[in-house]
Length: 330
Image (cartoon, rainbow, N blue to C red; front, side, top):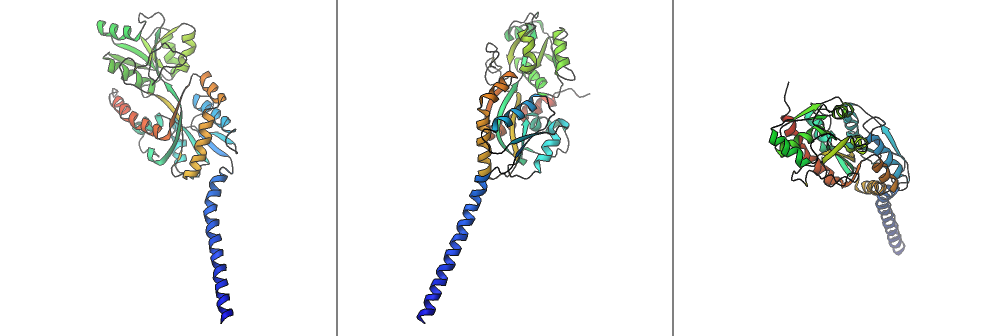
């Protein structure tokens, strides 16, 4: 009896040890998965073709991540429908951290208002962090009588003038920002849309319009050459290349409309994997090589948390909706 009892005790102890080891293995298994991420290359999707500012940002951040993530980050251009195709496809990608995508403000503020049956919504994604901002610059020709933004506002009101301003298209953030600014300033305005920023800029250089709205990168060569005069910018802070140009907020107009570029991913990425991704992206955004690439392209660095990106989009959406509702219908 004594032997049987001791056998039972030893068997119980053995089974207990096996059970404990199993529990230990299960608990360390999930940690190992997080610690091992990434075990293969990460795909960073650019929803626009090669050559533009979005492509530059994705390639620059991917290159900078090489120092901070053990596996390469591969950029894949998947353009089409102003970013909608790639964004819709990313929504259904596996939320394992191996597929991330670069986005812009318009994907969640303009596209939902202009496209029926959009294949995604803001709630479908985890927003990781914001990288840059391309604010809107209001410029006039160097021969214009308006030396400052106050000159333009006061002069237009005094003469009861309608300010005709060229832009890259009615349904675009530059046009929206221009209309919103003149509306808040109490100035009558008429947006003159063109098929792209280049012909809109040409109209300004040819003095065919009173003003022009565009991103700093498009205007800077002509500002440096002395052909254009910048008056005001729609950014939270002054633009580093134009330190003397005031922001719209400084002039009393609470306007912050610009093209934010950010990184997001399919919703549901495990918290530990997301932590690794964020660390790599944040450190990459602090690399001198990334900052220089952005500065050379006249892109304003504007780091934001994922929550700040989401909130900015939520705040911007009703402003854009109101402006779009005011666009004359043909």
